[in-house]
Amino acid sequence: MDAPLWTETHAPELSDIRQPKAREHLQGAIEEPMNLLVHGPKGSGKTAAVRAFAREVHENPDADFTELNMADVFGMTKKEVSNDPRFASFIDSKRRRESSKADLINHVLKESASYSPVSGSYKTILLDNAEGMREDFQQALRRVMEQYYEATQFVIATRQPSAVIPPIRSRCFPVVMREPTHEETASVLEDIVTAEGVDHDDDGIEYVAGYAEGDLRTAVLAAQTTAEAEGEVTMDAAFETLNAIEADDQVEQMVDAAEDGRFTDARSTLDDLLVDEGYGASDILDDVLEVARSRYSGDRLAEIHTMAGETDMALVDAANERIHLSHLLAQLGER
Image (cartoon, rainbow, N blue to C red; front, side, top):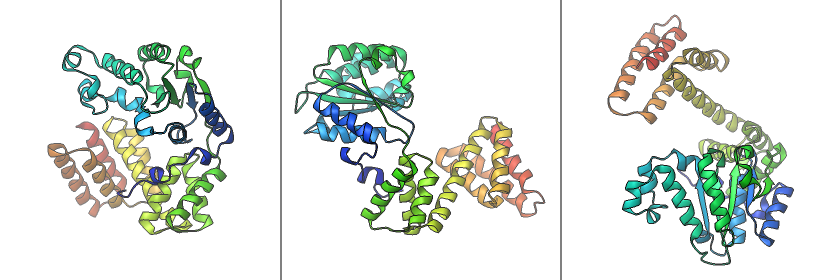
C-alpha cells in the first residue's frame, strides 16, 4: 500500500471519538491535567484517541508530545537504541559504551521527562503497548513520574492494565476504550470513503466492518486496500480483495509453523486452504515464494526457490497436490 494510510490522513479529532465515556474522560483531563491509563482491546482506537487528545491539549504537539511504542523499544538491540535519532541526543559515547540496554532506555525516559515544554505548562509522553514494559523499567518509570509530575503528563496505553504495576496504576486516571460496535465501525468507514470520494454501497461498508471483527484500524485499512484494488468499496469488491488478503495471512502462518517445526499445524492450514477455501496448489506455491522473498535473500532464498521449483514440477503430474506441498513444508522445517 503505497498511498498515505487512511488511518493517518483521517485521524480523528477528540470530538470525533465515538465512545462517549472515553471522550468525556479525555476532555476532563484537558481541564484538569493528570496522568492517564488508557486501556482496551487491540484496534479499539487507544493510540488515535491519545493523539487526538494531544493535538487538543498542546499548542505545539510536535514538540510537546512524545510517543514511544514500548514493544518496539524493548525489541531493539542496545546499538539500535543508541543510534535511534529520537534518543541519540540523550546518549553520549561513554554512556553508550558502559550502560546496558535497560539502563539506556531508563536514561532516555528520564531525559525525555526532564525537558521543559516548548509551549504551555506541561508536555505529554505516551508509552504505547505498555504491556511490553519490564518490571524494573516500570519501577524506574514510577520514580520519574514522581520526580517530574509538575511538567510532564504520562499516558500509559495498554491492552492489559493488569501488566502495569499497582504504583503506576494508582498514579493514573483510567480511561477505558471498549471494542467499537459494528455500527460505530461502519459509521467511521462511511465517513472516510465519502471524504475520499470512493464509490461504495451499504453492503460493502457492512462487509468490511464485519471482516474487521471489532478492530477499527483493520477496518479502515481493509477499506483502503479494497478501494485501491477495485476502485470501489462494494460487497463484491470487498469479498474478492479481503479473501485474498486472508489467504496471504494464512500462508504466512503456515510458513511460520513449518519453519518452527510445527508440521501438524502447517499441514492443517494447508488443508484449510486447499479444501475449505478452494485455492489451487500453484496459487499457494506462489504465495509461499512471496513470503520467502519478503524474508530472505542470498543462499537461503535461492534454496527455497529450488525446493519450490521441484515442487512445481511434481505438481504438473500430481495425483495428490497435498502430498507435494506437504513435502515442501517439511523441507522448510528441516533447514
